[in-house]
Length: 537
Image 1 (cartoon, rainbow, N blue to C red):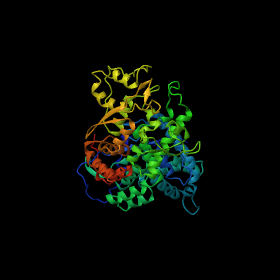
Image 2: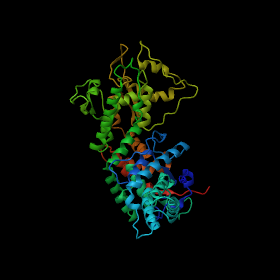
Image 3: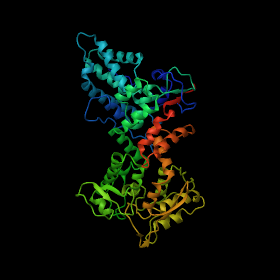
Image 4: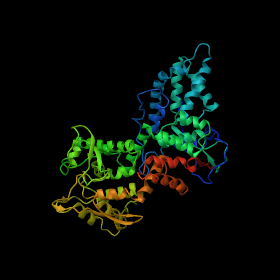
């Protein structure tokens, strides 16, 4: 039989307020203004997590390995402008068929009907249970009726297991599964500030912390109407922050925030960098992954430790590359003290190589990295009339001298006065991340400066810059903003200033600057649980 495709574009869902549920307690809004109601498409990670939340399995399913990659906005793939293209629609269909085949067997006890009970009664119970979990809200009678029609159609000439498979396929290709809503109560007038429904609040909180649907404990709080309380939301946020799912979600944040998701595709000129190899790339990536994992699991997501740690976790290959003696057996990762010329993740070879060119370092890329990712300052693109081809390496000059001459153009000077002094401070590391004091027989000048809110600060070398940034109020303001963009899936707006203030205060409340505290500040804010309903077109 032919299965009708259930999902629809997000724009159509904005008018489907009837399925968003009822208000939590009838309490008036706590705020006078709020960001707009919206729907958000699940990311690949959220899709897989949502599937795995439904099935009793010890081996997580990965259904989205063949999905088209998500694009990024402001560096993050979690934004609310993700679309369903024709290609992705076909891929979702394939995934839904696979999930349905797996689920038919895993959930056999739920759709199998004893002879003493009418089959449609059993089918309705099965549909309500699975759809409620999949849609992250109580299903409506209209939802159930649609799926019962499909069940009855599928039963013509087929056994109940086939009908269950078709229903599951429809559920997992439904818009109500693929999108999560932030619409508020269905009875609200247009252009009004309203609370999210209890299930929307639970869903928003859980996805912000774990990229997964709400668990049983959070759902119970939603059903009891407790999530209007900021203290209750904080309690669940801190509980979820201790889970492996939260650490995986924060790991993805750190990767996307620092722009190091493409390390597997890194390539370098072996004639310029003879140490580069597949093995080196694997070792450098393993170092950064192990270090981030350590920061998240053992140091409570401390951004200060991330930036200025005097150690890393690496294998013998990286120890020799860093000019230190390995203390771990070959082929294993271990804690490695860093020399004084390195500090934290900014001086990891994987990061330095990412922000470099194929055959040289790149002061511009490294300066833009610090400005955009760590200081949240937008760097405008160069004018269309300006060539952005970097200067060719030469054997009688340093990279700093070449780039200084290349960017000494009055049209470019405005941006490069800010970019270059930061990037030049990284010149004690070559394009692979190897420490150096000379280049082409000439002394390397790694002096630089960075403009902070407290004034211009001079430094020499990337390690000193990392230590300065780890104490900077500018970074303490930027990191919560980056986390807001990641968790909320959108650009910041003027209305978001209060919630950003809450996040920043929570982030600074501990001297370690912990990522989890910033998320707690987010979910505690009344703005997190309010939206302005949409005006009619």
